[in-house]
Length: 136
Image (cartoon, rainbow, N blue to C red):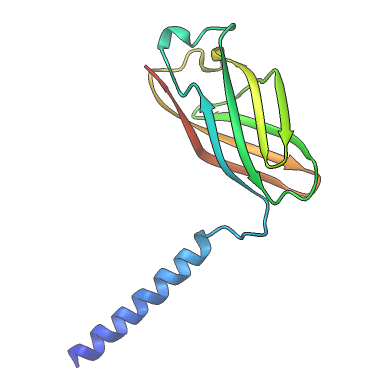
C-alpha cells in the first residue's frame, strides 16, 4: 500500500511539474525580448546627475513580423523611462544610445532592475528584470 501511495504521489508531482513548466516556456514562434545588455552597468552615485556621460542599451528580440515602431527602456521601481538620443534597429538587435546617466538622478545606491517594451504594428511585448544597473 505504501508503494502505491508513493507511486501515485510521484506521478502527481511529475504532472504538476510539467504543467507548471509548460506555462513558463516561451513559444518559439511568438514575438519576444530575448535579452538586454546595459553599458555601463555600474556607476558611482556621483555620476547619477551627469548629462554628458551616457548609457548604451542593446536589446535582442525575436519573431517580430513587422517593423519595430517603438522601444521603451525603464527602471522598475520607481518607473522612470530612459530618454535615448538614438535608436537603431538592425535585424533582431535594437540599440538605444545616448541615454544620459541623469536617468538615475535621485536614485539611492544599490541594484536597480531594468525592463523594456518593444512595439510593432501587431505586437507589444513588455518584460521586466532584463538587466540591472548598480549605483555604488
